Length: 458
Image (cartoon, rainbow, N blue to C red):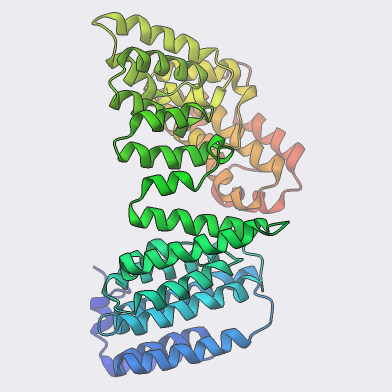
């Protein structure tokens, strides 16, 4: 390994004194890095110093009023993560109660921080989620009074308009214990009764109390209470039906889970639940019919595999042929293409693209990229057409965040161009570039990225 590589072995060889000098030099004038180093020094002194210095930082965050620009989000998130690590490693091992106090206080800063910015990419929301995950790691070792902890959690959740604390009950279930959870349950029931007695109950409060009720039921393993926390209208919602059905299925109540799933319509997860219920109930004929119907609605490789396994010997060959025929003409082009690629019938997938490439949804980046990569070696034109669809979709919608990916696809199109003998009237790479330049020539940031990728762009 090169002696100049920035790795632990080479840096250690510089010695402590030289490393200290370099650290002072590189952090000079950079407040965020200096704070990080100071916290590490506190950790070296002990848990009390860590807590004291972290709370000083909390105070400055609490007092700050300025807008947090998007450019500062990652640095701020990095600082939060460094505090999580310090609490998790320097405080929690010896005093989990003190660690809880520190991170709970950090979570209370969340609404103020999020209120000072637009967190469209959810960088900050995610890092506060990591704070709760850290609490969950050491909460089983906490020994706070269950009734006091229950009251603290209940009051916090009842007033949590930002959703920062929404996973508090699962994170603290072991620390709450049976006594704390019962107290939470009683508090929630009282609050729900109070809210329902008002003439116009606030929807947000009902939603927060309902979530608490469900989380307590989950923590207590009370499936009936979890089911009862939803009314008939809510059970028609697909996501709710899946959540309820999975819990009933896990409790060996497959027939009830099936009834709820079938009453909520259809969807990928709902269909998965129906399949699991019918399999558990050993209703093979009904399961076979449902799998085929589900496949015809949305072609899916796993559905077809499950269906074929239930057929008598030799019937699977004709069934597979019928499935591919259905996919080729299916109205859901993305699902059909995904099925054929997953089934590894690349020839059929290529034919589908050649016949219907004008109808491709170029914004389906993940699936189309996987398909383009799979087809690249044997069917380069089909791969290029998929990449062109993604490039055009990106430029048409002006999704600047996707420009780098689109430039990568453009580079691959250029690389595959010599391997395509017949473009079938689609035009070679030069023609495609000309069309792009004519229609999207003003997308300067894209062309800058593309020029760095593709040497033959003019």
